[in-house]
Image (cartoon, rainbow, N blue to C red; front, side, top):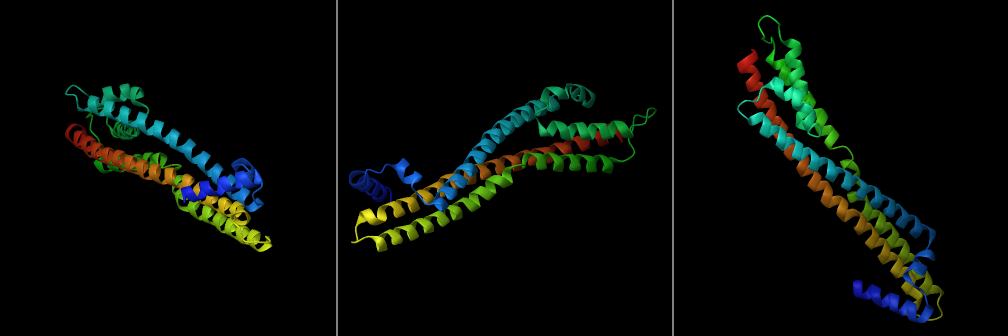
Amino acid sequence: MFFYLNFLFLQTNQNQGVSLVDLLLKSSPIAKFVLILLLLFSIVSWAIIFSKWRALKNAEKATDDFLSRFASRNAKLSDLYVEAENYKHSALTKVFLAGYEEVTNQMQSETRKIHSLESVSRVLQSATIEEVSQMEKSLSWLATVSNASPFIGLFGTVVGIIIAFQGLSAASGSSIQSVAPGIAEALIATAAGIAAAVPASIFYNYFLNKVRSITATMDRFSLEMLNIVERNYL
Protein backbone atom coordinates (compact mmCIF):
# COMPACT_ATOMS: atom_id res chain seq x y z
CA MET A 1 0.00 0.00 0.00
CA PHE A 2 2.83 2.39 0.87
CA PHE A 3 4.61 1.87 -2.44
CA TYR A 4 1.37 2.16 -4.36
CA LEU A 5 0.57 5.43 -2.62
CA ASN A 6 4.05 6.73 -3.45
CA PHE A 7 3.51 5.70 -7.06
CA LEU A 8 0.24 7.60 -7.19
CA PHE A 9 1.82 10.74 -5.75
CA LEU A 10 4.79 10.49 -8.13
CA GLN A 11 2.49 10.12 -11.10
CA THR A 12 0.37 13.03 -9.90
CA ASN A 13 3.36 15.27 -9.30
CA GLN A 14 4.98 14.47 -12.63
CA ASN A 15 1.89 14.77 -14.78
CA GLN A 16 -0.36 17.21 -12.99
CA GLY A 17 2.03 19.10 -10.67
CA VAL A 18 -0.06 18.34 -7.61
CA SER A 19 1.62 17.98 -4.22
CA LEU A 20 0.25 16.22 -1.16
CA VAL A 21 -0.81 19.56 0.30
CA ASP A 22 -2.55 20.49 -2.95
CA LEU A 23 -4.29 17.14 -2.91
CA LEU A 24 -5.58 17.74 0.61
CA LEU A 25 -6.71 21.26 -0.26
CA LYS A 26 -8.50 20.01 -3.37
CA SER A 27 -10.10 17.05 -1.63
CA SER A 28 -13.86 16.80 -1.27
CA PRO A 29 -15.63 18.62 1.61
CA ILE A 30 -16.52 15.27 3.18
CA ALA A 31 -12.88 14.16 3.10
CA LYS A 32 -11.78 17.44 4.65
CA PHE A 33 -14.37 17.06 7.39
CA VAL A 34 -13.20 13.51 8.10
CA LEU A 35 -9.54 14.54 8.27
CA ILE A 36 -10.24 17.56 10.48
CA LEU A 37 -12.40 15.45 12.78
CA LEU A 38 -9.69 12.81 13.09
CA LEU A 39 -7.08 15.50 13.69
CA LEU A 40 -9.15 16.94 16.54
CA PHE A 41 -9.63 13.44 17.97
CA SER A 42 -5.88 12.88 17.83
CA ILE A 43 -5.00 16.23 19.44
CA VAL A 44 -7.40 15.69 22.35
CA SER A 45 -6.19 12.10 22.75
CA TRP A 46 -2.53 13.14 22.97
CA ALA A 47 -3.40 15.89 25.45
CA ILE A 48 -5.13 13.29 27.64
CA ILE A 49 -2.24 10.85 27.21
CA PHE A 50 0.41 13.32 28.37
CA SER A 51 -1.75 14.57 31.24
CA LYS A 52 -2.68 11.09 32.43
CA TRP A 53 0.90 9.83 32.06
CA ARG A 54 2.22 12.61 34.31
CA ALA A 55 -0.59 12.23 36.85
CA LEU A 56 -0.19 8.45 37.19
CA LYS A 57 3.60 8.73 37.36
CA ASN A 58 3.37 11.24 40.21
CA ALA A 59 0.70 9.11 41.89
CA GLU A 60 2.85 5.97 41.74
CA LYS A 61 5.86 7.74 43.21
CA ALA A 62 3.83 9.32 46.02
CA THR A 63 2.16 5.98 46.74
CA ASP A 64 5.49 4.16 46.98
CA ASP A 65 6.85 6.83 49.34
CA PHE A 66 3.73 6.70 51.50
CA LEU A 67 3.76 2.90 51.70
CA SER A 68 7.43 2.96 52.70
CA ARG A 69 6.61 5.39 55.49
CA PHE A 70 3.54 3.36 56.47
CA ALA A 71 5.59 0.16 56.67
CA SER A 72 8.27 1.67 58.90
CA ARG A 73 8.26 0.35 62.47
CA ASN A 74 7.83 3.68 64.20
CA ALA A 75 5.00 4.86 61.93
CA LYS A 76 1.82 5.90 63.73
CA LEU A 77 -1.48 6.71 62.08
CA SER A 78 -1.48 10.15 63.71
CA ASP A 79 2.02 10.87 62.35
CA LEU A 80 1.00 9.73 58.86
CA TYR A 81 -2.01 12.01 59.04
CA VAL A 82 0.22 14.99 59.77
CA GLU A 83 2.66 14.03 56.99
CA ALA A 84 -0.08 13.29 54.42
CA GLU A 85 0.48 16.62 52.63
CA ASN A 86 3.86 15.28 51.47
CA TYR A 87 2.07 12.54 49.52
CA LYS A 88 -0.86 14.56 48.16
CA HIS A 89 -0.50 13.16 44.62
CA SER A 90 -1.26 9.65 45.84
CA ALA A 91 -4.81 8.36 45.64
CA LEU A 92 -3.92 5.92 48.41
CA THR A 93 -3.14 8.84 50.74
CA LYS A 94 -6.64 10.19 50.23
CA VAL A 95 -8.07 6.78 51.10
CA PHE A 96 -5.98 6.78 54.27
CA LEU A 97 -7.16 10.28 55.20
CA ALA A 98 -10.80 9.27 54.78
CA GLY A 99 -10.32 6.20 56.95
CA TYR A 100 -8.36 8.02 59.62
CA GLU A 101 -10.92 10.80 59.86
CA GLU A 102 -13.66 8.20 60.34
CA VAL A 103 -11.61 6.62 63.12
CA THR A 104 -11.11 9.95 64.89
CA ASN A 105 -14.79 10.81 64.50
CA GLN A 106 -15.78 7.55 66.19
CA MET A 107 -13.13 7.60 68.85
CA GLN A 108 -14.30 8.19 72.41
CA SER A 109 -12.11 10.52 74.44
CA GLU A 110 -12.10 8.33 77.55
CA THR A 111 -11.39 4.91 76.09
CA ARG A 112 -9.73 5.89 72.81
CA LYS A 113 -11.82 3.16 71.15
CA ILE A 114 -14.14 3.08 68.14
CA HIS A 115 -17.57 1.47 68.07
CA SER A 116 -17.82 0.23 64.44
CA LEU A 117 -15.03 -1.28 62.39
CA GLU A 118 -17.50 -1.97 59.59
CA SER A 119 -18.17 1.74 59.25
CA VAL A 120 -14.45 2.39 58.78
CA SER A 121 -14.37 -0.35 56.14
CA ARG A 122 -17.25 1.26 54.25
CA VAL A 123 -15.53 4.65 54.32
CA LEU A 124 -12.30 3.15 52.98
CA GLN A 125 -14.20 1.34 50.23
CA SER A 126 -16.13 4.48 49.29
CA ALA A 127 -12.93 6.54 49.14
CA THR A 128 -11.28 3.88 46.97
CA ILE A 129 -14.19 3.92 44.52
CA GLU A 130 -14.05 7.71 44.33
CA GLU A 131 -10.31 7.75 43.66
CA VAL A 132 -10.59 5.01 41.02
CA SER A 133 -13.30 7.02 39.28
CA GLN A 134 -11.00 10.05 39.26
CA MET A 135 -8.10 8.03 37.81
CA GLU A 136 -10.34 6.56 35.12
CA LYS A 137 -11.62 10.00 34.15
CA SER A 138 -10.99 10.76 30.44
CA LEU A 139 -10.04 7.16 29.68
CA SER A 140 -13.44 6.68 28.08
CA TRP A 141 -12.42 9.26 25.47
CA LEU A 142 -9.38 7.17 24.51
CA ALA A 143 -11.59 4.09 24.25
CA THR A 144 -14.07 5.97 22.05
CA VAL A 145 -11.34 7.30 19.75
CA SER A 146 -9.80 3.84 19.55
CA ASN A 147 -13.08 2.28 18.47
CA ALA A 148 -14.54 5.05 16.32
CA SER A 149 -11.53 6.44 14.41
CA PRO A 150 -11.03 3.44 12.08
CA PHE A 151 -14.69 3.58 11.06
CA ILE A 152 -14.54 7.34 10.49
CA GLY A 153 -11.44 6.79 8.37
CA LEU A 154 -13.25 4.01 6.53
CA PHE A 155 -16.05 6.43 5.74
CA GLY A 156 -13.47 8.77 4.19
CA THR A 157 -12.04 5.82 2.30
CA VAL A 158 -15.41 4.98 0.79
CA VAL A 159 -15.88 8.60 -0.26
CA GLY A 160 -12.44 8.62 -1.87
CA ILE A 161 -13.18 5.44 -3.82
CA ILE A 162 -16.46 6.92 -5.05
CA ILE A 163 -14.59 10.03 -6.23
CA ALA A 164 -12.03 7.79 -7.96
CA PHE A 165 -14.78 6.00 -9.90
CA GLN A 166 -16.37 9.33 -10.77
CA GLY A 167 -13.03 10.52 -12.13
CA LEU A 168 -12.65 7.33 -14.12
CA SER A 169 -16.12 7.65 -15.64
CA ALA A 170 -15.57 11.29 -16.53
CA ALA A 171 -12.15 10.72 -18.12
CA SER A 172 -11.86 10.18 -21.85
CA GLY A 173 -9.67 7.16 -21.28
CA SER A 174 -8.86 4.94 -18.37
CA SER A 175 -5.53 5.94 -16.79
CA ILE A 176 -3.93 6.10 -13.39
CA GLN A 177 -4.14 9.92 -13.46
CA SER A 178 -7.93 9.85 -13.54
CA VAL A 179 -8.25 7.75 -10.38
CA ALA A 180 -5.09 8.76 -8.51
CA PRO A 181 -6.55 11.72 -6.58
CA GLY A 182 -9.58 9.77 -5.38
CA ILE A 183 -7.60 6.69 -4.38
CA ALA A 184 -4.94 8.81 -2.69
CA GLU A 185 -7.68 10.63 -0.80
CA ALA A 186 -9.13 7.28 0.28
CA LEU A 187 -5.76 5.99 1.48
CA ILE A 188 -5.06 9.20 3.38
CA ALA A 189 -8.39 8.86 5.21
CA THR A 190 -7.55 5.25 6.09
CA ALA A 191 -4.11 6.22 7.37
CA ALA A 192 -5.56 9.11 9.40
CA GLY A 193 -8.09 6.80 11.06
CA ILE A 194 -5.40 4.31 11.99
CA ALA A 195 -3.04 7.06 13.19
CA ALA A 196 -5.72 8.38 15.55
CA ALA A 197 -6.85 4.96 16.77
CA VAL A 198 -3.57 3.16 17.47
CA PRO A 199 -2.08 5.52 20.12
CA ALA A 200 -5.47 5.86 21.81
CA SER A 201 -5.84 2.07 21.98
CA ILE A 202 -2.30 1.45 23.24
CA PHE A 203 -2.41 4.06 25.98
CA TYR A 204 -5.97 3.22 27.01
CA ASN A 205 -4.91 -0.33 27.80
CA TYR A 206 -1.68 0.88 29.42
CA PHE A 207 -3.47 3.36 31.69
CA LEU A 208 -6.21 0.87 32.49
CA ASN A 209 -3.62 -1.63 33.71
CA LYS A 210 -1.97 1.10 35.78
CA VAL A 211 -5.29 2.03 37.38
CA ARG A 212 -6.02 -1.62 38.15
CA SER A 213 -2.60 -1.99 39.76
CA ILE A 214 -3.12 1.11 41.92
CA THR A 215 -6.63 -0.09 42.82
CA ALA A 216 -5.24 -3.43 44.00
CA THR A 217 -2.67 -1.56 46.09
CA MET A 218 -5.41 0.56 47.68
CA ASP A 219 -7.48 -2.53 48.45
CA ARG A 220 -4.53 -4.22 50.16
CA PHE A 221 -3.76 -1.05 52.08
CA SER A 222 -7.36 -0.79 53.25
CA LEU A 223 -7.17 -4.32 54.67
CA GLU A 224 -3.89 -3.55 56.43
CA MET A 225 -5.30 -0.36 57.89
CA LEU A 226 -8.39 -2.19 59.12
CA ASN A 227 -6.13 -4.69 60.87
CA ILE A 228 -4.25 -1.87 62.61
CA VAL A 229 -7.49 -0.16 63.62
CA GLU A 230 -8.90 -3.44 64.94
CA ARG A 231 -5.79 -4.12 67.04
CA ASN A 232 -5.44 -0.64 68.48
CA TYR A 233 -8.83 1.08 68.50
CA LEU A 234 -11.50 -1.59 68.87
